[in-house]
Length: 111
Image (cartoon, rainbow, N blue to C red):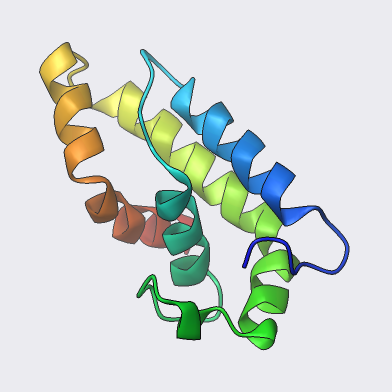
């Protein structure tokens, strides 16, 4: 599914961005699923269900069209989380466990 973008190499973009957000602060352990769910959530109200039928060619084109905005929104909320919350090891563990709860914060921050 990530190989179907028209202009960008989706696999490289998603892998690099996942690596980049995992280096923020003391480090996270987000996966590509988190990034793709975030991209779907932030793009034209696409469904966030991670199933093959959600990744239509039209949806993939919309995700690619909004990719820079998606990366910016996710990065900014991750940095904001670091600046505003208590940062100890337990917090990072909880953030990784409840990663899907961050997506609505990203959406609100972007608005």
